Image (cartoon, rainbow, N blue to C red):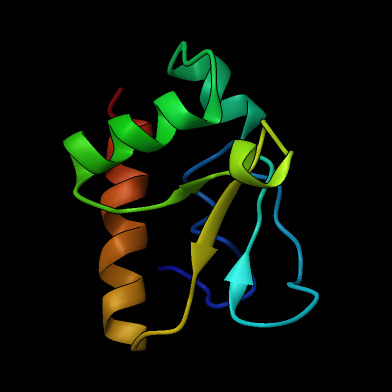
Length: 95
């Protein structure tokens, strides 16, 4: 299962550096390993692939000067968060 909101995903979706958010309602994990695994040259490309193939919208870290990160909002229900993380996990693990 997914541990939220502070785990940034399930332990079986290897590659995202987890950490506690410092404020607001966003996670900002380092996804360098995901980018390498998916052969993505940028966080923009990774976000587009996750959107197209998993149906989950994320914000590329490049928008904040952090190319190897993604911004994820957890300002929604736990049910929606779990569904989103399950979709991301399936996409990352099956690619």
